[in-house]
Structures are given as structure tokens and as C-alpha cells.
Length: 185
Image (tube, rainbow, N blue to C red; front, side):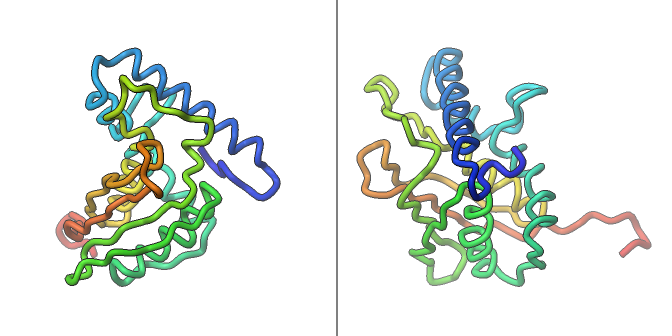
């Protein structure tokens, strides 16, 4: 999954998009309803060979931190900026906008004008409740957990379902404290 989209590698991006489409298609065949497929897309492991959402995020954060030279974020607003302006750009070649901050500053929306995962995709009528790009929510949760942030991520709008944009709602749950052995800091 390393370096999915780099300048001049459009064919890599298209290959990933098509491969992801094949994964979703197979999951739709393997599971009876869209809710089960949505859970699988967000789940920790697909198999020993092809990790999904959360586990991809757990693994991707190391690559991201090494390649981006981004330091520790001090608050959720700074985290939102890094996700939108650095991470999405680095791995998907897009820069979502950040909107709809809650008054408490613990929730925001990422608006994707263009979601590269849905290129070449049209949802069949019998899969109207499928959250096709749910992998992204798992990636966000997994990556942020590795930097001690528990978050909720969910789709609230989807261009595949006729909405004008794709919107992922992010909610800060809590800071995860490291459990270091006694005497270590």
C-alpha cells in the first residue's frame, strides 16, 4: 500500500482503484447484506495477505510519519489539517476541505469533491446501503489510534448515492494514554 499515488504514476492509482473494486465485489458475493460488507471494509483484517481499513491505517502511519516530516499535532484542529492537506494528498492525490466544526471543536467533516476510490464505480440497485469507500474510515481510525487518538469516522454523504460530495464525519473520542511499565517514562 506504500506510495499508492505519486506524481506521474496515474496507472498505479487506477490499478489500486480497480483492485479495490474487485475486493468490494468479492465481499458483496461473500456476504449476504451490505451491513456485513460495510463492517468487513472497516474491519481489522481481510486475510493474511490483504489488510483492510483499520489495519491499513495501523501500518500506514509509520510510512506517513517517515515520509511527511510532520511533527506531533497539538490539538484536533491541527490533526484535521494534517489529514486533509498532507495525508490525503500523499496517498490519494486529493485535498479534502475541512468544514462543519462542532462548537466544542471535537467534530469536523472532510469533504471530498472527488473520491478516487469510486472512479469506474456504479452501485447496483440491490446494494443501496453499501458504504463503498468505508475502507477510508477504518484507515483514519487505525492511523489515529497509533498516534494515541481514539476517533469515530463515518460517511454521512456519498456521491455514489447521489449526493453532491462525499463527506466523512470525524469525531474525537479521547486521547489514548500509553501504558508504560512502572518506572519508565
